[in-house]
Image (cartoon, rainbow, N blue to C red; front, side):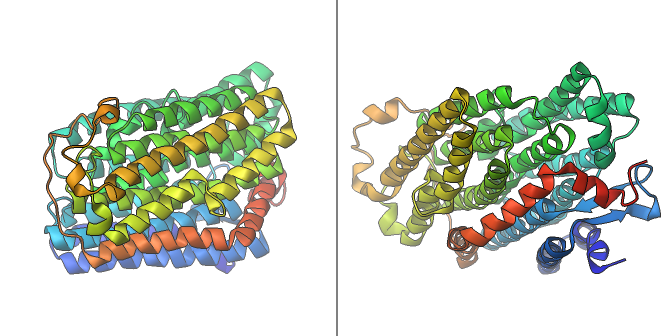
Length: 522
């Protein structure tokens, strides 16, 4: 047993243990915060160590309880898993610090510590478990862990808007879970196993129509979780109602678990890429419908929610192409999008507190009132919009290059949709920044509302403007995550090289199978 195999189970065990401790501590706020921060810091350090080890030594495989696959639970960490673990742990830690700062100034009215910390750590454990699951049922367990925790986090505060959004989210999530569980049952019935490494050898041997049904079932289940059009209708109404830290985690990470599941299963179980054409079409529609929805919004959080949907289309585009360059670009863009989207939602939370609202109809003069927040939102917006030399531009350029190499008319059409989406994203975010920050406050009441009349505001917004205190820790946490997005730009070369090695791993299913079954699959 080497160091990597010792560390792998800890990424799930530590947050679960931390959750139990924080739950037992009740209202001991300082101790709960310490346990939560320590747990996620430990997982971030372990993930960084695993990333180095698996890059040097190959995948780390753990057979839980000593039961060998396919009879026991197997945990697998390869380059892709390690990268997702590290990025997720860092984002969760940054958002937790933001939430702590918010709790200090609000007295925990929005995110009660006695509930928030245990639930937040369960959500983290579910995320980490999903990334290292070596079988479909354990992946399902990871999904259910994070979804159960997300139900609680989404409805924190118990407002009417949050309860209504929570009901929609719960119903959609339950439908997705039923689809996934049904898929697992069908796959087990057809192959006799749910271990991914064994499925990689047995599914290609099935009749083509059976493969198609199984693949389509998995795609539908994961597409709901990833908010792929037309299964993304639930997201814009669900995310903006939650507290800022919760919204940031949901936007940055929860949809990416669905994308990760699509990426993992499509490359490992269906290497012939039978769904390339429908995925390309869905990618283009997700981009365009999402960004058109963003253009129609007069609320910053809803605008960001629609851009979140639209940029999932880029990731589906890379998965659909399926070449080494496309997969490397997809992995790079996943890291970029997690970082930038999380940062932007935290910045939106700061805007809401300083300006008292996120409605563009009532925001103005924020550049003078909160210059630091203006810079944070502006840099994040330029990165998401794909302005050179930011990581958003580099990721999109690599995806477009992979599409051009594919060279089909449909691939060129998706490239066109992606370029249009990038420009429209930049326009929507620049318009929001101009109205919220650059427009003088005195012009808000007398502003020509012809454009605003064509936009849709948050249906739950009652028109009130309530400003709140912003703590240095909240600003610092947001600035720290923004610095990471800038670091992703500065060190884009090494990060993309690692993404290329991760793509090479998942493009060759035999390497994954050999890691789980060194002596050959049974």
